[in-house]
Length: 480
Image (tube, rainbow, N blue to C red; front, side, top):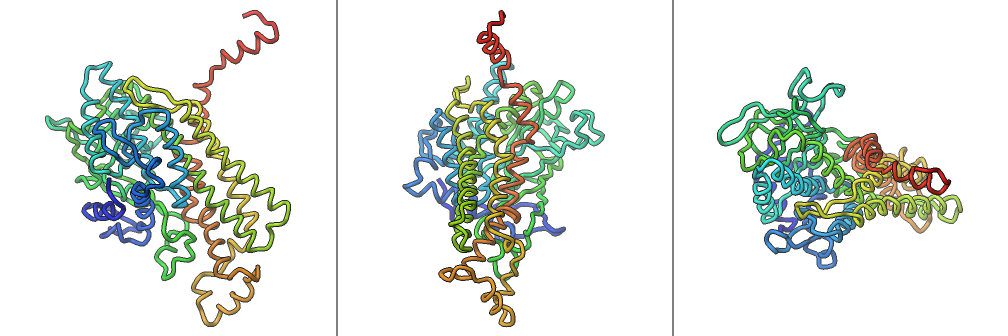
């Protein structure tokens, strides 16, 4: 397993083509806007070497028998699924943001199931290819970017009917040694911090869409791949002289649009090629795993609740009954999020490939809660924190000899608490509910792992309504 330092060194060896604010980024790793997101991924390596977290952060490879980072592991039991949930909460609490390795882990597990199923139907050799690739990922402890979301273009049209065929990643040429692919993947979390990109289809497909039914893996710096960084609220605060105004200066996340401009993929890294009937099952398996992964939001929620309790102490409002009740409600909602992720793990099952998968219905219910509860937790945090959270002057004003003395005087609250401590907690709450981390806590809670409506569709498909009706009719005496 790599250490955090070895992970950082490995990123320096990559030759990425990345752009932000209209300019090419020559050194992504040390860019002040990107660096905090790398720090968050590095935490997944750091905690894996700490004895107190070894049980959650590591596993034993079913391929090699070696101890590996759990983010490269294929779930071998229900207990593995439960530990994944607990690991997500642990890391959310340590970083206060998205730590970016879940998507790759979920991609690996979904492919371990679906490659087996394709082979069983078509006599192909995808599972063997995949397992060799998995061994490479585990042996080198790589961070993988799971790339599912296409731009989609006109969403009323399937892939093959798009006016611009590149709105979904597709094959443009087949060669003896591989394929050329073109398209893009949007909203790619932590893409610049990844060693590998694992591409999957984003929707269920029919035979006419077979050129879009693709899954493959590439090094993140493969020729023809370009990254364009997305903006986040308050992102340029990270380039200011002092980082106090960021609220969480050490950690963060990033998103990117990833362009595939006639990129070559060798056959040994292709895991689905035009088997269109398996595009839907791959999307469903990945989505279920990834909706379980939102246990991380309960970890970030722990941080936000802790900050809310702290600011109520600093403000002198903690004894107010309504403040106590609001914090109780925040904890109730946050633990409910955790329960949802645990439940879909505890009800997991073994697939024909040997991989353990979560309960699909409960995973979608869990993620549906995530689209709602963090927003209420954030609202309550803002309520308790007060208006100063959004009107606080800058760190430069506090440092100014002309204005600093007045700010120190008038922003003092509890006599036992420094003004500096008070504004640091206020900035953290701002970060989690309005600033850069709001992408990782709020907006990602809404749209990550698919839209809320996608989860509701899956809930409607998975619920056995006929059985519920049968139970009701039996109790009230209606014949079948």
